Length: 239
Image 1 (cartoon, rainbow, N blue to C red):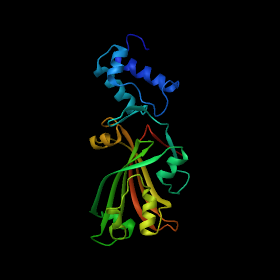
Image 2: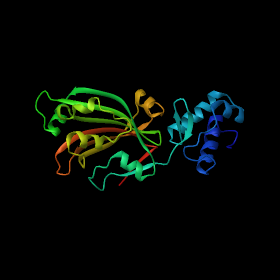
Image 3: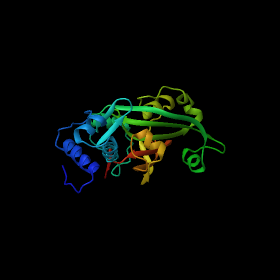
Image 4: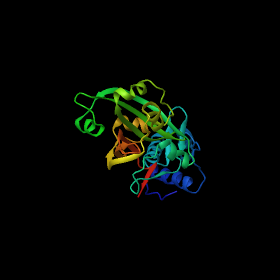
């Protein structure tokens, strides 16, 4: 462990981090509970909790409600800038040897904003179907997914079972056209809201990568808009 001048929580942080990096703890392994670590290190549970929260914020650990704290799976890599091809998260997960999942958080009918109506080629007063989910890889939260679709042709998705389903597959099933290209996109860094922090099992105000993407079909016709918030320590965009 680190020297005596190092804060106790930082010593625990570095010790567990080293155990993960040297393979003592492996991906998806459950680590000892806070009381067990408190007894092992001879410190208070508050000190242990701070170390665990820091490790979660940095992507080394993830808390699973009712199950405990587990070692994170490796980063998921996605090539973003070299191609306009739109690849579903479910496919990316499986290519990385992970099992994709999805939890529906919210579904609403909302009015289209001017930029949304313009892209989707909708008239005044048009309505959109808004679908919000948390996407997971091997049960670990990776990003908050926000999808906007023209309501009329996709209203079936307001009540369709979307847990653990590929949204691209469902869009193709209902509308007959699959998101295949990214017509335009922007990426920026933002801070997690308290709601996002709770959904994604990260610290409040932790950094997220915000991807705003406008998807078209194989012929370039607009299909949907995606506004996604990725946990940077668990997902890597490659150029």
